[in-house]
Length: 253
Image (cartoon, rainbow, N blue to C red):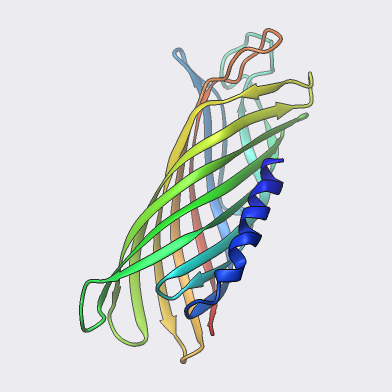
């Protein structure tokens, strides 16, 4: 239901997409994955992978200065699991394995850009939006984490020339309807106080008036509070600290 509602909101805003100049971008992504579950006693389990093991793509439709935007990303790959067998009472590190993952993220919102330099060098984009995040974690059984989130961001971009620009963007995210469903027992856990942020450093090189190449570094952090108990089980505190490198093309129209 949450995912369907997100797409409905996106479609309602699509009629305003061409109020100003827009660009569509496509990138190939690879993620350095870092996830950990903890208690007051220490680590319970971790999922880690270096660049090249979790990869995917992103697409985005964005305004040059002011207007609505849409973006979507998808990644898939294996991470190295270190933890313990569920219910065994054994310590962290007593079990190792490989976990398969699928991560998708969608955002819709509005961007407004303030020109800080009359000569066009410095710009400050401000964004307000809504998003949806889904992570399928397969470790012998399935765990599905998903939530909607409110998103607010601000950035600072500088054009060194008509061909080259560099920026930094920071976004704060507050989740709602955050849950984890697992199919081992069929339980759904309500996750508490889920929030995070994303920092992006984009570099763009214009090849001509229409086409650009770009690369970006993204650091994404989520804090996930322990859930309510269900059937004698609960989802513990956890964190994600993922770093993504993206390389792609942007078409201006």
